[in-house]
Length: 365
Image (cartoon, rainbow, N blue to C red; front, side, top):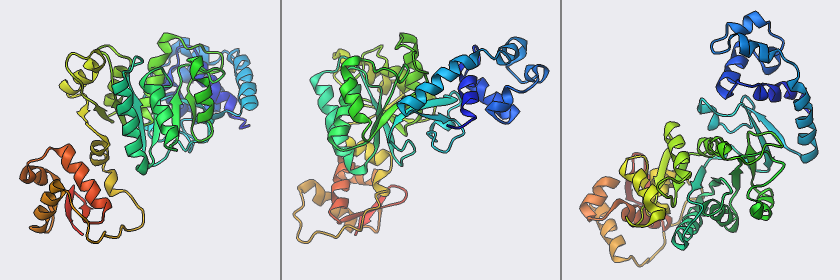
């Protein structure tokens, strides 16, 4: 075990020293270990510290708790991730209030090329669950990591769908890694360890208290390229995740619903307030995130004598007239919505008929 680990844990446990101040201390002093050997007068001069916090930093009783946590880490094969470590989720490092220390159990690469979070109401409808399952099945070709919060409803649906499609899935937890909440999801959580993992910034023994979940939500939002809200009530907890993702300048998407559906009010409001982009299918995610340009499989051989559907034929005939066409112009000339055009272009690209170009332009192969 890294000898400096005890100082990294200690700095995360000092009362009144949050993640922002902890990282500032490390920056000023040079390392977590150096913080605890610094003189009180020097600590007091660091912005945001002051006399009381400096006194707390010099109180060595916190190391009694540290020793207990190290024993737990070693016994349960937990991987501690300090914010300066190479394995720490790099997307989180761009968030000012990201955890100074994370506890991870599992096998997932937290810095995979594509990571998305999928969240929603705990009281998901059958419609919402079907949306979630189809979305993940249709995204499986691109092999994203699916992140959620292991809660009832959409969260656990997303984790299950990811596992059903052989995708890596990671849960952010609002408590220590010595337990799973809700307990009914424990068997699924344990299965996640085979190809995914559990992630938390709470030490063992911390209970799943209500106030802990916004902290969990910032991990879910911050470690992902985009957050997708499938269903949400007007005051749903997933809206907190969406707001956090917006504050981190991450993409946020939401499925719309009927205006009188309680479980769609939150999503509809996100879209109405321009806090989320409206999506109807995986094709919208693929297009907006630019994933279709990043697929690096072997070149697709054009299928011979392929029979085109009428709508596909419209796009092909349009592309025959020009060297390349911007997707917005394709929608205009074809008189089709963006979601439909994106889906058709993706199908044509997989068939080797169409090629995507930089700048969201397309041409015939």
